[in-house]
Length: 72
Image (cartoon, rainbow, N blue to C red; front, side, top):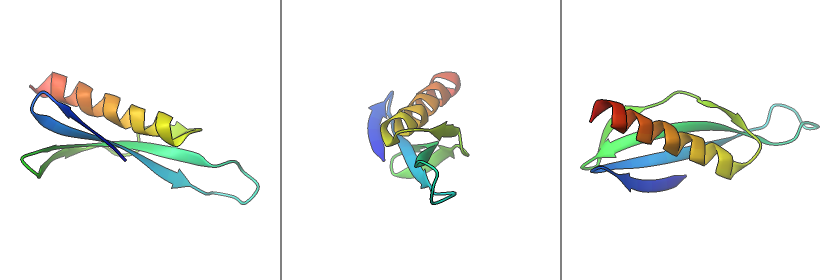
């Protein structure tokens, strides 16, 4: 999980490990969360699947920043 402050909100990027099969490489599902004053504002569903935890976290952060930009 990666946290950043953005325009008065706390935005989170999440990477959820997906283990669908023993012989398949690890993949990470991305999601994002937005909070303000420690209260949930919005959360995404699964945004996509990525090869690395970092890529998934960045996708979640990008989604959260875009949400703030379009609702601020």
